[in-house]
Length: 117
Image (cartoon, rainbow, N blue to C red; front, top):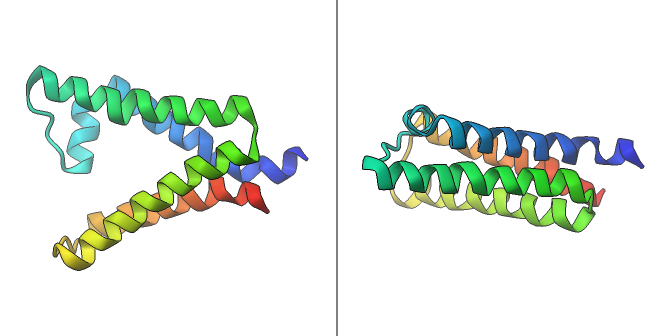
C-alpha cells in the first residue's frame, strides 16, 4: 500500500535532494562535510559522487517503488553509518559533526529499510 512506503519514499526523496545539492553546489556541500574539493578534478569527483550518484539512487527508488531497491539503498546508508562509527571509535574522529553524520546516515538508511515492514 502507498502508506507503507511513505517513510521509504521520504528517505529516497532526501537522498535525491542531497544528490541535487552535491551536483549543483559541490563547494558549499564540501564545506558542510569538512571536505575541500581540490581543483577542477576534485569538484568533478564531488559532483559525480555526492551529486549524480546520490541523485540517481534517490530517483531510482522513487521510480521503482520496489521494496528490494529501497532496502539495498537503505542498507548502503546504514553501511556508511557503520563505517563512520568505526572511524569514530578507531580513528579518533570524535566530534559532534561526525555524530550528526552517523545520525543522519542511520536515519535515512532506516527510513529506506522500513520498506521491509
